[in-house]
Image 1 (cartoon, helix red, strand yellow):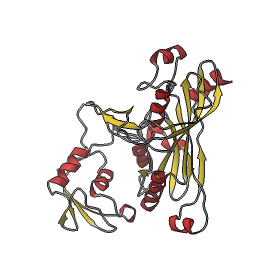
Image 2 (cartoon, helix red, strand yellow; image 1 turned 135 degrees about the horizontal axis):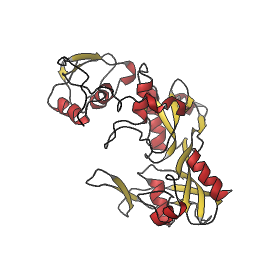
Image 3 (cartoon, one colour; image 1 turned 45 degrees about the vertical axis):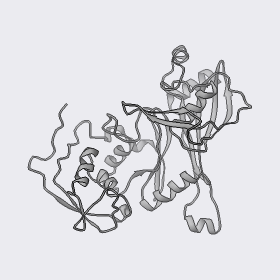
Image 4 (cartoon, one colour; image 1 turned 120 degrees about the vertical axis):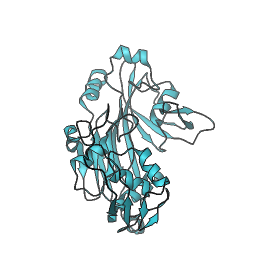
Length: 321
């Protein structure tokens, strides 16, 4: 389907001043945020051809912008926000479960991508930006698989984003827990899985992870919350953050995530009449600390919990009550 063009007159070059919250961001990421509706391939091409300038100088892909910089953006057509571009119908703000001046956390629905791409014209972050056009800065702090529901943290300030991503990388204070329903009776003695994982990208662009001795170190902690007839409800805590880590670790142990169409058990899923993949980011928090560390990081502790959606809660009631 051809795109509806928003501009009727020929587009013109524009000069944009960098807001303070975007100081330090790479020029490509700044343009991707600013030029909503423009394909990334076009943005990278305009940078490569020298069409983008920072304070009069030619920008390079690795160039970073600073508060007040004048960015020259070449003429470019932007798709209009027709039915596919109007994200307000998603009622994204109803999914917000926590908000302060630094961040907001949504309970992302299963089936919603965190961002557009790979054939999708929108995701959670685009929906939030559309719902809050006056919010100068909104960026994902981490990712969730499209089929996974639950806590998704969005930064409202660049300084906070940098700090929380350091915590995500370091794993010293930040804690993430998932509810996961798996096929089989998970042994209570299996409290962690540490097999290394290697990420691969298929020709279709689909990402997959496989257990490999040449993969990256990987660790997930598990505890059993409840068990039913041939199914188990686990609490999973990923210590590392590899692609599809919980799903692959469960499948490797012989207890695949229920409803997982990539690493799971399609025969078992069909027998259970599974409505969705049973993986939910149930809680997210930052441990409070005191003293010099707190002054250096300047991040207050928080703890947020996200309830399961109706389909997952109904499945739990049916199999674990």
